[in-house]
Image (cartoon, rainbow, N blue to C red; front, side):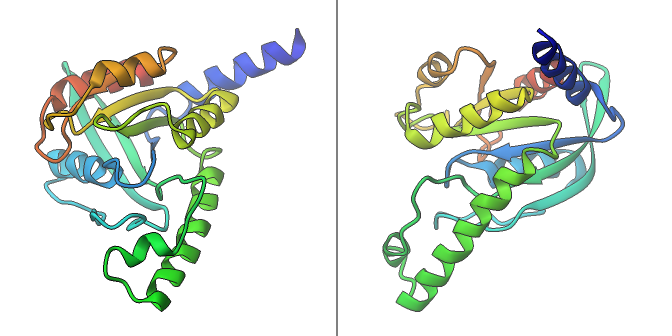
Length: 209
């Protein structure tokens, strides 16, 4: 009973501490659109991008933070520190990078850096106040990677909003993503095209509040 109450109070404290500056973590598998969404938010409210998005997996291999991004929705505003993290993967094979015309040496180095990036991203879960789990809505949400991410978040009792990205594509299935993890709210959008961003901001405020 005491342990359960402790977890509850930790969750409440994490969700509502430091309202002036909320650390918003971007998590998900490689190429789901984390960096694209982080850039979209920064561009919407600061007029500039701050991180690199690429079709090559694990382009983001270090945690990148953009501070003081003030977001407004429905007459309210919150200030965030955006924490863009490397893509989470349960297996990183250097041969996957060879498909993107990297040399063997470059591929092995990127695989090494990507592995370190995953470890760093998991460590950062203890420093964020709220997490966006960005998933590719054209892919099967019931993957080992996605289940691992959700499990880590549930264990830490962190407020979560699942983002079903790439809803502009024909194979997108936002409902399938939502049904996969019904314990958390889900919002569909296209970070690349900026579709449904108003609804996204509204849902984000509900999760943080």
